[in-house]
Picture 1 (cartoon, rainbow, N blue to C red):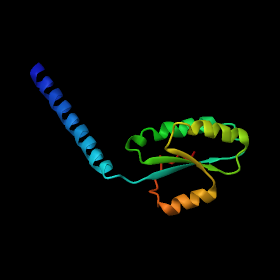
Picture 2 (picture 1 turned 30 degrees about the horizontal axis):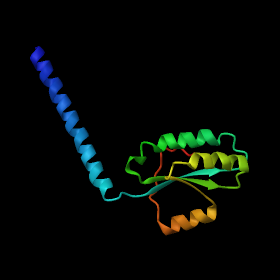
Picture 3 (picture 1 turned 120 degrees about the vertical axis):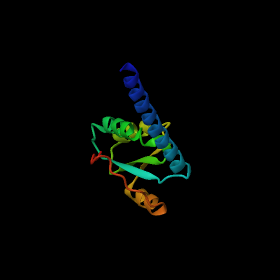
Picture 4 (picture 1 turned 60 degrees about the horizontal axis):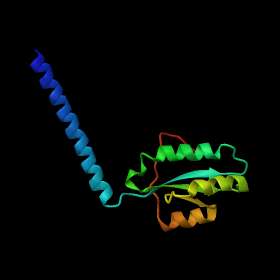
Length: 125
């Protein structure tokens, strides 16, 4: 009885390991070719008291998508004040995958490279 339970457990672990290995292999083949670049937009407005929280939350949600290095966070300046921009510039340091731009710069960026749209569980930042 114990041998059959151990056999089923080992078979289950083997199947689970093969599925995990297959997923990693397919992801490696996909992103080796330079997978699609996607953008996330975060609107930055004047008097935004929660900007640091929103930036940390966006970083946390993108952490799991950034392992391929293709997802970028764009902070869209919609008339932010000096204090809010100071928080954004402090957040930008050391994060080359985050950029701050105006609506005109965003239009030029999107026309230069068409993005792949992603929806993150219906959550808007």
